[in-house]
Amino acid sequence: MAKDVDEKKYPHIHTRFPPEPNGYLHIGHAKSICLNFGIAREFGGVCNLRMDDTNPAKEDVEYVDSIREDVSWLVSGWASQNLGLKEKGKTPETVSSNGKLDFHLAPVLTTRPLATEPFYASDYFDQIYEYAVALIKKGKAFVCDLTPEETDDYRRNAKASPYRDRGVEENLDLFSRMKAGEFPDGKRSLRAKIDVASPNIWLRDPLLYRIRHAEHHHTGAKWVIYPMYDFAHCLSDYIEGITHSICTLEFEVHRPLYDWILDSLDLPRPLPHQYEFAKLIPSHTIVSKRKLIQLVNDGVVTGWDDPRMPTISGIRRRGIPAGTLRRFAIGVGVTKFISLTDMAVFEHIIRDDLNKMALRRLAVLRPLKVVLTNYPEGKTEDLDAVNNPEDPGAGTRKIPFGRELFIESEDFMENAPPKFFRLKPGGEVRLKYAYIIKCDEVVKDGAGKILELRCTADLDSKTGGATANRKVKGTIHWVSAAHATDAEVRLYDRLFTVPEPDASGDFKAFLNPHSLEVITAKCEPSLKDARPELRYQFERLAYFALDKESKTSKLVFNRTITLKDTWAKESQKA
Ligand code: ATP
Ligand code: MG
Image: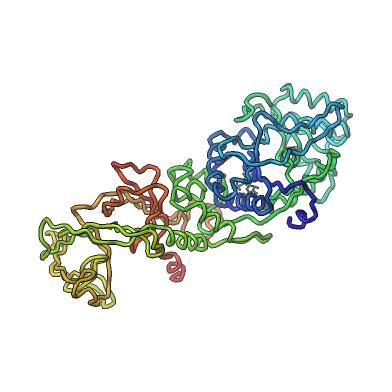
C-alpha cells in the first residue's frame, strides 16, 4: 500500500469495512475495523462503513443500528476523521447520457460526523442491475432455469447449463421479467458465463442474481431479485471508489471472480484490488455470528451485549475501553496464517491499560463483620487514600473509618496454614490506609457459622503514629459498616472453559458454569458517585465498571477482569 501511495496509483487511499447486518459485530470484526480504518488513518485516506446487505432474509435494522454504534465507539477520537462521507440522497452515477456505462470516482471525501448515514450496498441495486444488463449484452451472463440444487450439482461436476447459450435478447427479456416479479423464488437465476471447467469452482458460471420475494430492511418491497455477494461486493467497492478491498482469507478463492466481473465490464480505471488476511480467532470463545446468535436465542446469555459475549457491544459493556480493544486488535498484527490468539494476550492488555487508568476504591465482595472493641462507639475518622498509585495526578480522597467494619471473608481463616498472612485468631493484619488490628475472638452462631470477629486496633499504628512502621505481613481491604453502600456486583468470567470450544461438534458443551456470579458487595461511600466513563479497581480484587443498568438507587458494577490471571494457573494444573 505504501508503494501504491509512493507511485501515486490512486488519487487517495480508500478502504471500507463491509459487515453484513445479520448479527452484532464481534472481536474479529474489531480487527478488520482497526485494519481498514487504521490504513486510511496512516495514509490520510478514507474508510467507508458499508452495510453489505444483499440477503434480506437474515438482515435487520437492529443489526444496522448496533453496527453503527459499535464502529463509532471503536474509531471515535482515533480514526473518526477518516470515516467516509455519504452525501444525502446521492449515490455515484453509473449510466452516462450516451448510454455507455460510465463511472465517476467518488470525489475525494472528507470527514463526516459519526451520527450520519453509513453506506449501503443496497443503495446501489439500480446500478448493479444495470451492470448485470451490461454483462448480458456482452454475452457474459445468462438466465438459467436450473433449480438451485441442480445448479450446485452442475457446477460441482463442471457441467454446462443447458441454458448457457441463450440469446442476448431472450436473456434480457427473462432478466427484466425476473425483476418484474413474474417468477417464484428459485425458478430462474442470472449466472455469469465464465468457464464451467475451471479448477476454481467460483469461476464455474457462478450465480449473479437470485429471485427472493422478500422485504428488505433498507429497500423495502422494491426488489424481488437480489445480487449475490460476489457480484455486489466488487461493484460496491468500485462505485465507492475503493482502492484497497481488504477481507479475510476465505475470499482469496473469490478474487479471480472479483477481478473477472470488473474486467468484463470494461470499467474506467483504476479498479479496486482485493487483499486477504487471516481472521482473528481468539481462544476460549467463538466468533461466528451464526453461533453467537444461538447463545442469544437459547438464553445462555442475556443478549448480544452480555458482558461475556465476544461482541464489541459486550466488550464495551464489560468495561473494556475502546483504546484497549484497538491496542489488542492492532497489536496482534496482520498475517496470512490462520492461528489461534490466546485470550490471555487480550486480558494482559486489559490489565495493563486498566492499571494505568483505574481509580482505586475499597469494596468488600463477601463481607465478614469486624468489631473493634477498643475503638470508641460513634466515632468516625476520615482517612486519606490514594486514588491511583500509577497516576499521581489522580489525587487522594477521604474514606470513613469506624468501630464496625467489613472485611473480605477470604481474608480470615480460623485454622490457617503457616503461610497465611492475613487475619487469623490471635494474628495481626494491617487494614489498608488505617490501623493494624488483632483478632481476639471469633463469634459464631449455634450452627458454628462465623457471625463476626472481635478485634482490637493498635491505635498508634496509623500513618504518622508511633507504631506506624511496625511490620505485619498482610494488608487487607475493608469498608466501614456504618458508611458502606451496597452494590450489585456481577462477577464475569470467561464464557467457555476450553481454548477452542468450536473445534469439535457442540460448542455449548464447553460453557463455563461459573461465567457469571451475582453478589451484593459493600462499597466505600465514594462509589455512590461512580461514573460510567470511569474505571475502578476494587483494591486487591479486580477491575470494575458501572453497568448500563446501574441507577443511583441501585448501583450495578461489572467485573471487567480480575487483577491476576487465574486461568494461567488452571492450565498449568491441567
Ligand atoms: P462471521 O463469520 O462472524 O459470521 P462474517 O465474515 O460473515 O463473520 P461479515 O459481516 O461479512 O461477517 O464481516 C465483515 C468483515 O469483517 C469482512 O470483511 C470479514 O472478512 C471481516 N471479518 C469477519 N470475521 C473476522 C475475524 N474473525 N477476524 C478478522 N476479520 C473478520
Ligand atoms: Mg461474511
